[in-house]
Image (cartoon, rainbow, N blue to C red; front, top):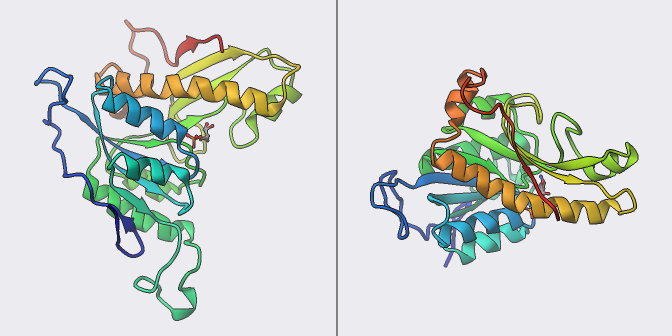
Length: 259
Ligand code: GRF
């Protein structure tokens, strides 16, 4: 059950979990990585993380989900899984500085202020942007209490920004896919950790291509989170020092998938 806390719709269903909390299907020494997820829409990628976590396949604990859209289906997915949710979409009576702001959509600065407050409360080890559709400020990115990764529907550095599938078709690219990268102040430009790649069928519509890429996303995101949770990818270290480790394959790690 959820209760409302203005302007955050807060659903404090799960008890705080410490880093040392063992998972049901994990050895007692394996700590769960505390993950916060930011969403804006359908939340199919969030669902994959929830399902993998519940199946004991991912040593993570999703400490909370933040949505900038009150109608996002992702919010229902989180609530159904008894995960804390914070919906930061509109200015409410309690937080409006002036009466005329009541009920207005939150600006990005207001969103970021409340999101930061919420993240500091949850204290995640990792923040995942999974279909989060607003551009975040460098102030916010520099202040969040954990490394942040983003799922992007292209093979970065190609096709930063929106409308990636149509742009791939227009360019007649042979390959397309998706990337998980570290979030930095420059849009879609942080170190790319992993990519999933497919062969483009030039006869397909952008919608059909998007649907194939989504199937890749549903594998690359949990795989990347697993690599982070297991310490194979150290995002904080990579952020501090972009140098490639000399004895390991260089980043991004790639999955070739046939979908
Ligand atoms: C994904 O295609 C992702 O690449 C893009 O937004 C979409 C989110 O899908 N950034 P969902 O909300 O996880 O279903």
